[in-house]
Image (cartoon, rainbow, N blue to C red; front, top):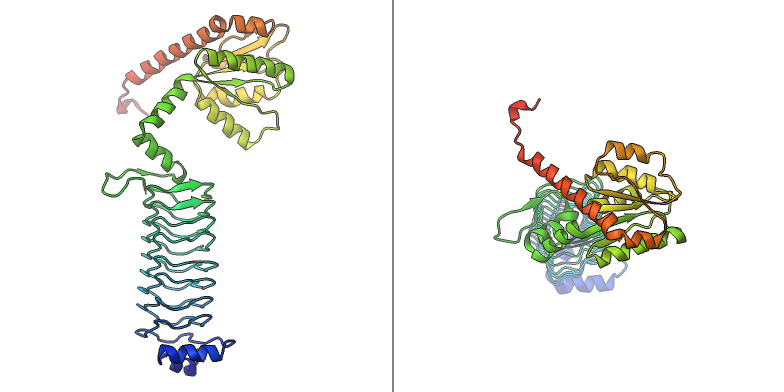
Amino acid sequence: MVNEEHLKILKQSTDIWNNWRKKNPELRPNLSKANLVGLNFNGKNLTRVNFNEAKLTGSDLRGTSLIEADFRKAELSNSNFVGLYLTGVSFRYANLTNANFIDANFSMTDFRKANLKGVNFSMTDLSLIDLSGANLVNSNLNGVNLYMAKLNEANLSGANLMGALLVDTHFENANISGCKIYGVSTWDVHLNGSTQKDLNISPYKKPSITVDNLEVAQFIYLLLHNEKIRDVINTVANKAVLILGRFTPKRKAVLNAIREELRINDYLPIVFDFEKAPNRDFTEIILTLAGLSKFIIADISEPKSIPLELQVTIPNFNIPYIPIIQEGQKPFSMFNDLQTKYNWVLAPITYKDINELINNFKKGVLKRAEEKYQEIQIEKSKIIQTPISIRDIK
């Protein structure tokens, strides 16, 4: 409960309160559960004051010192913290609805489980701050630095995150639906279990465009508004060739020769060097690279990881697969099944040595790949042009 003597002194002038604090530097004033609505706090030293469960609705705290103050469960809606240093302040479980924190400085500030609905944090530095479980619905986080901030289980639905810096920011199990995210910078954001819907990537006064994934939002915006990005994507789709094979010194020489020949012929070679044990990252990477490629050249000589690479990608992508194999060797056991089942897998091309492979590369490999690619495109266009009645779908 509130210490009545402390409260009586607080209600007096700023000079009386501050002089009392100077004379009692070790004393921690206890104003817990006090009704402080309407008090003038201007210039008062409120360092380390206990405001636990106190009522401060609409308080103007500008010009005060609040370092290490305790506002747990306090009522602070519509309060003004503009320009304050809030080092070590605890707002845990506090009600800060519509409070103003513009230009405030935070360090080790605790906002866990706080009600921050409609709060204005615009252009502040909230790096490393703990906002776990906080209610940030419709809050203004425009231009805020959230580097390594914790917003696990926080509710940010409808918040303004335009121009925010999101680097190593934690949104695990958070709700960020309906946020305005134009101009955000996202790197290594943690989004496991988060709810992401209707994220608005448009600037002010522009038609609303929404996406459901924070990490791809920047890419989607650039894709829509940057002609160079679209050109890059088209270039990759028309020229990228994934090269798969074994990366022993002998086999790598073959793959390097293929890469150089592709460059000479104006293709974009992508070499996947992976000799480690396969894992989830392996699968995701190989699928991504295959999805970017116009066709795939796979050296199935002395196979190690290549059988798994082909088994992972061939069923998922209707693009030409051009297998090559050195004379005297046989394809791995599962290859014939893949070739039989998927007509975009060509018959293996045999080669005696690197010189023979490269000398015949344009005609023996590239021509076959391009012909198969065109054949696949024609088949795809036929499927697209054939209408299906909804009545025929069962």
